[in-house]
Amino acid sequence: MQYHSVSPDFAVSPQITVEDIPLIRDAGFKTIICNRPDGEEAGQPSAETIGEAARKAGLSFIAIPVSAPLTPSSDAVIETQEAINTLPGPIFAYCRSGNRSAQAWTLATQS
Image 1 (cartoon, helix red, strand yellow):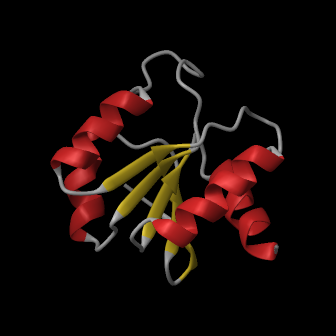
Image 2 (cartoon, rainbow, N blue to C red):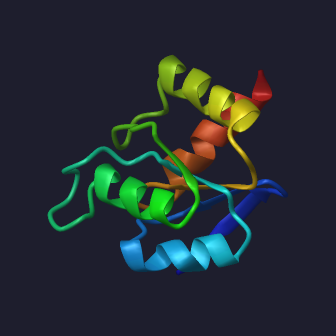
């Protein structure tokens, strides 16, 4: 699993699997954000599946889907701001490639 830190408290990644959850926790992350809509690609794990595994591992989880290739909506940006301000960090966010997650973080932290 590869990820990219966009700040000391926020990292982004391509799609993760349930098997990645312990690695994410062991890397020190406390919250996972899913920015990928369910069913975007055949075979991808659902947000519910990842969320359940995250919670079992003691992590917070929230789904804030952003449809590709669109820029995150104002609602998604507000939800990301709220997640950054209220959920424990550091935060690990993912989508198909990590780009939408990075855009959501950038827009949420510019305001």
